[in-house]
Image (cartoon, rainbow, N blue to C red):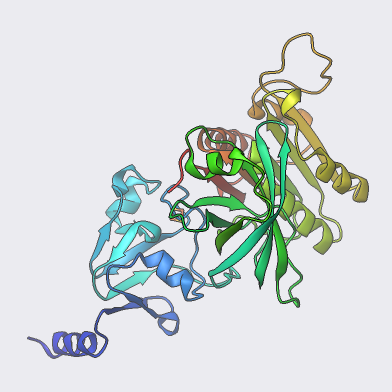
Length: 359
Ligand code: FES
């Protein structure tokens, strides 16, 4: 055994069950995680500013070059957002990597304002059916919680292991406050989805539920740039949070929200949108587009898939905006392709993709 190997063995023996994660480009930022834990979850639980968004292997934001050490992938990385070249270069997805021993990795940490993940109990204080099979769910938290615009958390009914991810629709609490006392979510009914079926069964005001979060980084970049926000259905929740936050914080940035729904009977959250429009008439525009509105109805707005609203007529300088896109996986992928074709650089497209099932 070389003296180096002996040192590693001695080091691991001194930390039973723990693995040292050394960040090659920033050794001072190295951290420990438990053996067999998921690299990303363990890192963000400790407040490590690790890039991430979806935590389920779809967005690619947590891509990390594995220089040495052993992990077990939870998914086939060949079918993940990693390109063939990235796979050849040793990239992994940190959210889908179980740590098996000490690792040396390369990933750019920091600059992401990652807040520590917490588990907080709460009670339902608003349970309101909205059009389009959506519930406005508002929770009073037993302890204040901090989150950033565009972030999400998981929610579970008390005593259940079934958790679903939902984005906060409120602007984040002020940085100098203890955190939000109440938070709100838009929950779409998902046929067969255990959490949403439970929630839709009856008025749940007064019921105890658990939150874990915050997660995600969709809203962190380019605070002073104009924004194009594209929301499909309840993908509107993080968009409301991001737009309200940025309109408050920046002095000149302008925002266009493109909101896609099926029919005029599904239009929800109109009040929240109208309030924002009334408050910032010069800096906010809303385009609602309907994909399945019956021909001959009184709807005067645009019709078609959400991508049909993204064209030269929208009046957006696609080369100069930051885009925030949230909705179902196929919708987000179609919008990403359209925006790139219109000249928007991929690094300025920030997306949150809903997966069809819970976990
Ligand atoms: S792929 Fe890992 S956080 Fe999205």
